[in-house]
Length: 348
Image (cartoon, rainbow, N blue to C red; front, top):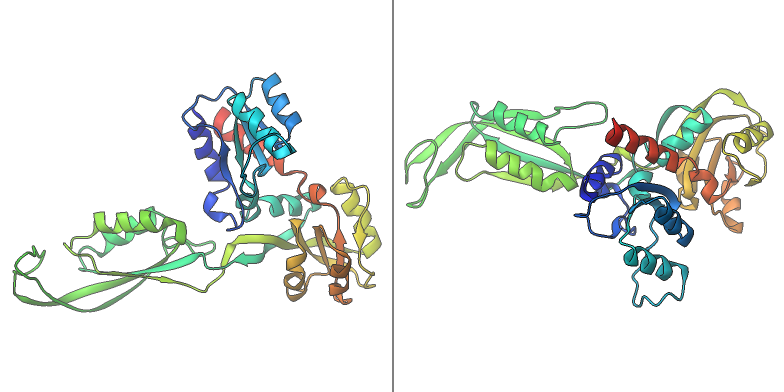
């Protein structure tokens, strides 16, 4: 199969539209039209990983962290990033990164983290903002079902655990066509007044062009009246971090030993014990100090993340236990998930 077909599968697992604006994900190096000889999955695409790919005849590397994060002004091999880029290009190896696209997915990095700890009743800790739009359009009663179904089939109308969501109201529409018009109902220069259905649906912003194409194809009017609005609603199924519950409460010290075992951690840096049992657990794989307040507001008893600095631990203010388990350790099972996903989609 071609590399672009693998990318299509990866898009199912971690849509690039889910990534944070600061991130650099997707195909970083390589030609998507090339045939794939094999796929190597890793956490970080370092030089030794490229060497391993060459040894195993894999010309596609799927990594979690992007090896190219900020712009490169020169590629001279003076640092590990430039050396990876040079070696990958010289050996015609493609590198694809998923990072925050998988961080933000409800089945991604943080769900994997939660599952490793056996948490139940999980939900997003920091729901993604500015990701939902609303479409309003108007059509004849006879055309309403066709338009609505076309929008649903292309991703509109999904709210949480529900699909095909819309609001429909009746009203009177008016128009009069000029000499260049070709009205579906009435004649040129005729004032037309008739029953119309107003259809309202929400959709994820990256689907806008697809939604509009479906609307125009299904609509009977020559000129389609529609409006699109940005909504302030947070997306409850996309976002960073998760919060869930232990099946049975644990004392703080016992819980930290439990985490060490499940996440294969050598040591855990943590804030002062609160002397309260742990029941509600917030997690955020990778650097998560920005979400401390979110964890507190969500009522978490503990927040597990990584890269906490000295003063971050004071932000706990005895309201919860803060625990830094290490950046890699908090994301360690991610590559296993990617491998399992690719095997199911490509080999089956």
